[in-house]
Length: 358
Image (cartoon, rainbow, N blue to C red; front, side, top):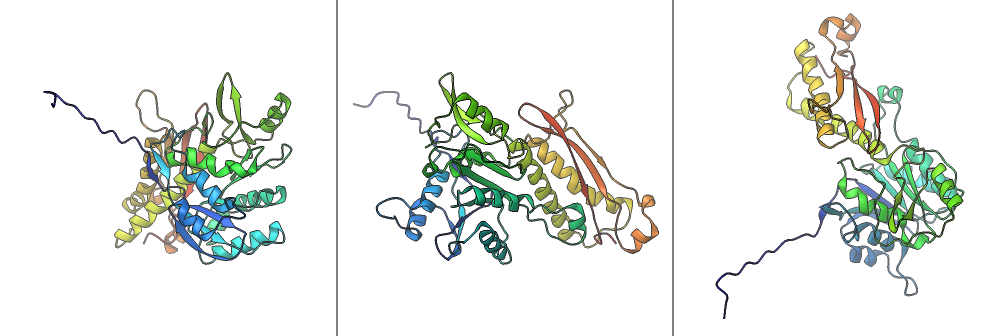
């Protein structure tokens, strides 16, 4: 007999898919055309088991996708691009293959590979470091396709100092700590969160002595640790010691600002070489910095709640005759206070509008 009052609550707490980091996984097990995958079974079909053991590429994807039990995010990563190259004879050969691939497909940001050797990790970190163009290179027409590399190592003495790479130590490389780490924290992107104190699923705490832990911290290599019965990642840093969320946040600001600039220019028939035209260009900067504030990348003023940033927009009167003839408005400069988990740091930027105003 049914009761007079019946209440049923169906709460779907499963994380939803997240696809923000534009991930590329490079296989060196043989040539395979680039493809986009959304499930582990789909990947296993391309990379079948070897002697009953799960192939490394599906293993890495599984670690990336299956973080639903421990992630603090409300989403999960469910999209990855995979390309296969012939087995390289050296790290240099792998980098050359990646650079050749970039000529036809450069639409990716986060890089993983199946190579965990010291020489490969260092070469890939160097490749990512050199992927961000300088201001001079941007002025010369080089496109900005900066990359960010995640790698793993079982070498407690691995040395390096690169801003655009994150290395995590593990006793067992088969656990794929690099993709597990990104799968656990990456779904928050582009929201700024600390990459420390997170607990990736599927990893075991490495057997380290206190001096060995200290050495890894000094080398800016991340690792899973256990303190007071709590397991978590230390220290959430890039290989140069910068916090991961700060570097990802800075990259996001550059990407979002560039996209906004193109959006403006695609809808405006003509941006005049006037104060009003300069303000139109500057709107991309303000929109980006406000977006960064909403995402927690840029700090808020405790009283006004406004983002802590300063933008200098030039006046038409400040432009030289040569700049006017070349339709090159003076640079817009900005400065913002980046909100780290436990510290704050100033970041500066420049937007150059060369030939965009008339």
